[in-house]
Length: 556
Image (cartoon, rainbow, N blue to C red; front, side):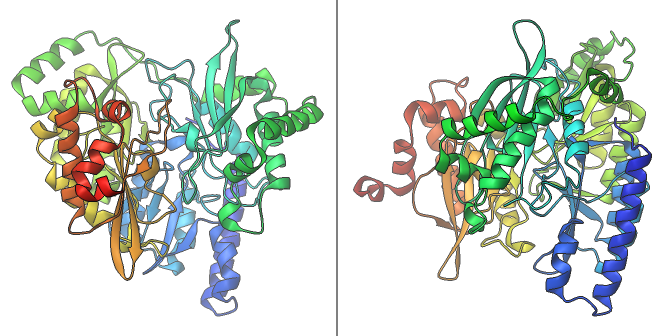
């Protein structure tokens, strides 16, 4: 795991002191809210419906036990006893007092954390595969490159005031678990025919008001050219991106309006002009960063399979958890464990201070002191001996975090919605809770199989509804909260944007509508091996529209 160097420590300390002075001036009335707004946004502080919100950076989703304990301390001391993990692998506190935020930032700095660039028109937190460095299917760990990008982009003088926010994601496996094709830049780490590492580069993906799947602009970029090529992309965007209309200011609009071929030509021209400059990455620097991410020494634990098999036979609930929440590891004696933050009927992505403390203890004792945050709003223990899975499950069960639903219909992504967000049009949390309760039976979830359901409370799509197999978008019409359904979205290596199937449903109707969609799928699938997305892509939207709208669908 990356550790701050002397520059990092000094920089974060100075930034914290600077913001403390700005907060004092705001509280004294020397700054108006309009004057304070750009200052607070540079430090991750938003003004929500009821209170300020602080968004904390968790670069590429990697945490130590010490850092997670600090997040628990902040939740307990300065908030209401919980935190909300987000789709950018960050954490949000929804109730801090403005007067406490400087001390919160000082507490974070003491464990090498901060809130810089979690908001504003800059390069946001770089995200990565939550199984990085552990996954059996990866070519290489993408996190060293995410860290290189983090260091390069932090308060970058040229790219701190972009036309709009800018998001980068990196994956190192053929199975895309980082949703790189719905990012401004998506990087797929791969090897060429000569065995050299490099990147397929995607540009112009995004969700929100106008969703687009990113376009591939480079099939293979040598790793030494990572920063040079990223700079070239950002310079073209910074120069040509729309600044007259914030709804058209993202690079996805520039790609759409300019055309992939012409934009690629401009990027390549800028890249050629700067390629031999100081941004070329020396192998020694790559190696130095990679050393921070050296996997832990994993002692042989061949007894794991026997222990795990015996435990599954004795406990069906444990067997379900292993089936759904345990992922293969590079080392066959080990596994990666998904800790679901989607308990049946609970708020998706939330964890209490006590739960965070308990997970930190668990990671320190049985998982080599490392935790990940997934963009699907769950926590991950990347390195767990299979021999210890039974004990891990037992301890998670004791704190209410042993739900066996990773990838199932109740593993719902949801934004905070109208319960918190000033931009939202409709509630997300209550809808997620009702659907979770409706499908809470383990047997029913297993019968349905893999199904990614995602909910956003407004068109900004913080709940990633566009790439849900089933997506739900909250809208407001004549003072009523309505929910549109989209079908067929996906955020993996075969990314697709979901199709709106018809008019919206009220809050009282939406759970029934989702049940109709699911039952329609179960009736039309060829067999249990055909998951929801495959079935939808085979038959299209028509049978689902008919089931939802009947004669109304035929008339349309």
